Length: 559
Image (spheres, rainbow, N blue to C red):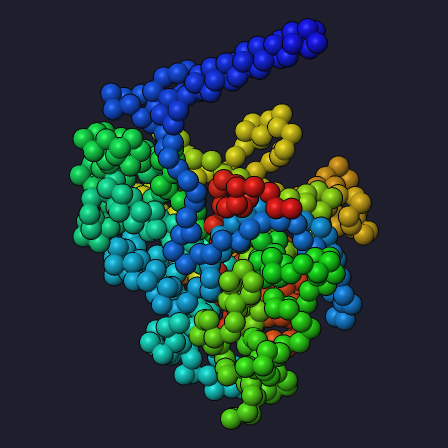
């Protein structure tokens, strides 16, 4: 009995000591405004390290809804009746991200055009190709044996089509729109939070005086052409609760600046379209879900709207919308966004209406042996161009660069106010294990194992035996258009006799069926490709944005 009392006493003492150490540990770890590393104060009004210790989570940016990431079977697991052999099933995982609730509409794109036309007047010689290069190709509506001039003249600008998805936009134009949208949204956020002069984005912006997100982060004082009356050292009360302290610019540590708008990757788009979040059936998880909605049919099975079409697509040969007055998809060309029910992620028109550009360069296979996490083919790593002063160069009105596309159109590569970019070099990738070059679009192409009759490709351009192995696997025609000193177009056509494919590093994947397509193409696993500098009347796009922080907003893992 005595021994038991001593044992119990020792246990109580040990517990007290443990609790004491735990208490000390908690005290020494620091609070929200005290560093756990140094014990120094964070966000002190006297100066020092500034950090948003009250940051909670990334809010959805304008137009976006959250898509919680996860694993899924990418590609088809059902019969491939077309024998495309380009979408074999692979298991992939994508991180959480945000995606546009709808396709980018005509009115959204016209806001972009209006901004370009206002800031860079096409009447001025130095800017004439900026606005024109961003214009959608409205002539895509024309057909040699069809009368479609109404859409050619009205579809983009008439208010009757405001909420219809924009078409006639190339992949390159969609990317530039996404960059513009990033800057305008972040400009508005910083104005709201007091870091940019109120209404400056409307009243004070000129061609020499614009805002770029990346340029602001690199050097806030260079924003708006270096006008420090516009880019303000905003109120630190957003971080530390001190209204009188106004001596810091917004930085990434503030948590205010949003990641960039961009085109979704093919894996992200397909994952978002399938929307397995609303299903708990094993066979659907394994890739047997055929459409963005539940079921194997294109018509609504619910009692109230039974028989209604769930997407806008071509019903049959010569049938784009059914018989007048009868049940159909209520659209002969495109339809206004949100005309059909959303999928379980809350995304509209992930099947039908228009097909959509995604970020990826096309290849016939998705190489899950190389990567099965955030899969994407198309990485071209760039770096900031550093000037003589050791700082990143900002593009000016005199240093705008343009590209002449294969169809003769001129497209701007950058805008004044943005940071000039240049490709990374071999020295930049030296001894890296995760990548060895800047341009990874043709990663693992042309290796001996991936090509039939490999040596024959080297002889086309007079290659020697020593460099035959450097030839590319995909040798599509490379037609180019350039301008001479007088501004006349010079067309260079490449001999196509020995060309074996239409695939090259400049063709991009587009996903989903459209108003021109039969139901076969509504399957999110289907994939097609098109040149990145060309446009059609059935391809549109929507933007995505990466999610920073945790995979889910829930604090604990699900059972």
